[in-house]
Image (cartoon, rainbow, N blue to C red):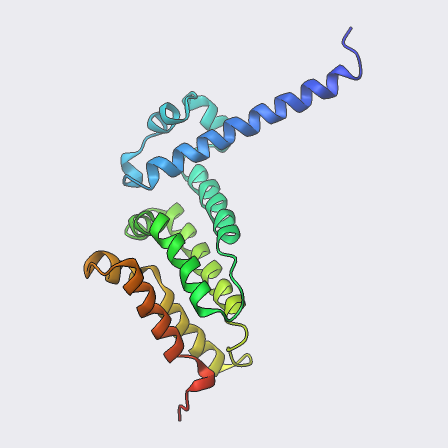
Amino acid sequence: MESEARRPYRMGARAAAMEATRTRVLEAAATLWTQRWYDDVTLQHLADEAGVSVQTIVNHFGGKDELADAMADRMASQTAVTRQAPTGDVAAIVAILFEDYERHGDANLLWIAQIDRVPAIARAAAQARVQHREWLERVFADRLPEPGPAREHALNLHYAATDVYLWKLWRRDLGLSREDAEHGMRDLLTSIDPRKRNDE
């Protein structure tokens, strides 16, 4: 008869194995969906990439949309960790943001292009917008006005100045070097500092 001490160990090992499988599937999804259109990736493609069966993916996530939701949650958590920046240090804020965009910017743009036809991606994009806005409120807390119209206006300006589409314009469309693009974003953020502006 299995001992009481042995049973929790086996249960722990099983849970660890299940979590490892779940992680492999999420990493496979991130690999494929950041390089290919959502509809072009089947559950079989995902299973092959992760080294599991399609049924395993179904057992863990239910289907493609549910897997996409889980992948978006995982990426959001990772972004929150990698985007740690000191409040008010524009140079550090821009450098950290560019590090993220240089790694994931093209994949983000691929997903954004599919918002209108893939509900899972629309949900992920909405979550990412909220997350980016909250990040802006943290890293620029020293310069933002008190809650109200002026704060909303300032946040909109900061959002535009740090959006992934601006990174795309400079790095992909205009071919600017990373150094020049970062310089441009720093200048924009300096110019829209509410503490230095005297709007009517």
